[in-house]
Length: 235
Image (cartoon, rainbow, N blue to C red; front, side, top):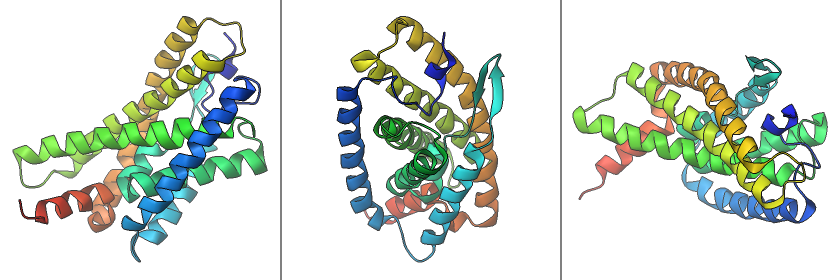
């Protein structure tokens, strides 16, 4: 199978034009909603952190790690960004990184920018953050505070799930408008298998980063702040 099909940064020509236009519209609409909702997540403390998160994701995405012969992975950053600065701001951070990479570094096709943003900024962030919230709430039911290592485990699982969700977004797009001759079943199986492995690397990096921030400045971690804000609201 062509390894271009497993690259999370899709290149031009893998998906036909109508589907590419459709998901560009989806990406624009989703980012518009994110820009509107991000105002509730950002304040004078978290705006600098959002910039640092975007810069960190951009830098780490440039480093690939081997998964299988002919297959390499890199940090997607969706779960990491959502946990640290919130899902809407996190989606914007990832989208900015993807746009800069596509326009200035030719990392991902310009006509595929909408599908790449949809997969990594929307599906990846949503899947990762929803998983993190669910696991964190379950952990809080057992104790008043969640230990830092447990937060790391939550971040690891969230990053793994977010990576697989982003990969399955590609499978959806390929099903709607894939131009290659490889069967949908083969693409789905290969994308799922390889991105589970990529998700392990993603999870390790995400867990280590989140734990470092939690130890240094837990007040800046959106997942923890949002949970405390919910707990402070009278029933």
